[in-house]
Image (cartoon, rainbow, N blue to C red; front, side):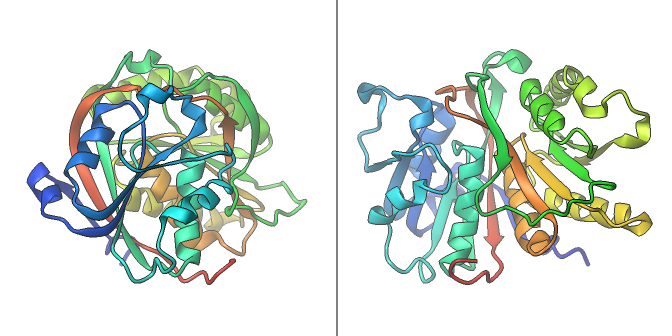
Length: 322
């Protein structure tokens, strides 16, 4: 049996959310209606907005509820700002994180940090957009890439042998990010992971159109055996982890991977899947999650919300400081 098939996921209604119960609920603040709606209806003893500096919110735009204003743009520093709002023992309480508005590297770091704090399980909420404001032309960020580097907590001890390196990219709408990451690991063979089925029927075609803009960087003009696509539902982190796991196993039936690089650029649900796969199967091997870091993000990129998903994330025992 696939180790990820036992994880719990469910499409939830508004009534389902209202009937849940948590000691702690954390959500990243954006101006999108889908984050506000979930925040308002999920009951919790303590709720907290996380406000990232990347969005550049004006004072009047910030929420009236309790919030943590993150001071640093670095993913490994933001939890230091969170600490004063969190109980000392996170392992004994019911936690829910709405991942919808999180910045991807910060979400991944939070997942590993929770595991290091002894949290063995938490619920994650993901609210799908009805559509993006300008469809495939939506601007999600300033498009100024500061650097491509390993995500804190997901660094690997890589080998000098690059003869069979692989880069798995969870491809999203931002072709410039795909291109930058692909160029950063130019010698690696590229595997693109598409969200299919997509969140909405037309989103797959929009996604393909954007990826086409990065095609030259993805295949580097090489023959097709250097380029391959795999698929996982855009709203399913566990199927994403399973697809990554199976593809790595398939590749290594022929020859061991020298260095493995992972880069999730699509939905936050798939970001969770990349993080789960890494923490479950990649610690201790020549593998890392890399990301094209940007310092400015758009305040709102979606119109309304459609389905809402709840995932029960089970974390490995990493121990404090792993």
